[in-house]
Amino acid sequence: MASPVTPQFTGARRRLIDELRAKGISDLAVLRALDLTPRHQFVPTGVRHRAYEDAPLPIGSGQTISQPYVHAMYLQTLRLHGSEKVLEIGTGSGYQTVLLAHLCRHVYSIERIRPLIETARDAITECGVTNVSLLCGDGTLGWPEFAPYDAILVGAGAPEIPQPLVAQLAEGGRLIVPIGGRDDQRLVEITRTAAGVERRNLSDVRFVPLVGKHGWEST
Ligand code: SAH
Image (cartoon, rainbow, N blue to C red; front, side):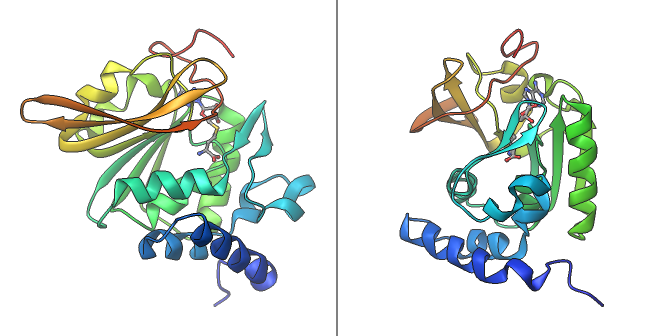
């Protein structure tokens, strides 16, 4: 059977992984997920030759696939063990969705732009992962049907913490969300505890706006 990961870009992918290690990504499970996931299949053909640069790239509909370092840092922060139920807001290209699928039990992922989710669905299927459910809609409302989640990752920047997402965290569960202005944000980690929530500020980041009822009004 043909491997879902084409050998064509293997060298470039290994070089990207070495670059990410040099930048501080040391979690072996995260590095393995990066090695298993063909990023070139998640970008438009016109930028495919740049798929293994540590840079964001356009994916159409005015959106971007995030920089690999940002994905890796998110995933390293989460320290997933493999048994978790994870909610992702902003499927985009579907690349991070597949990274997550290699690191947890099931990924629920929501994207508001239909053409993006359809392209992502094809790319995800091509990778051979089956523990992913996709929904087209407003991710600021979460996906209550499958709550509570052990982790929630938001891949777009919000003006403030979307409360429905906090409400859908399991006890001990963590929400990672960029909070701030439309162009620059601070990555914030919210942990739900028996007593309430704990907040920790992580690095400065730049994400496209989270658009929805508990986000920005429009792009
Ligand atoms: N991790 C993705 C990030 C894509 S950019 C990747 O690397 O491919 C962020 C995505 O969030 C965009 O596709 C955008 O359309 C989506 N988005 C913005 N607001 C949203 C919302 N309220 N619900 C779901 N998706 C949203």
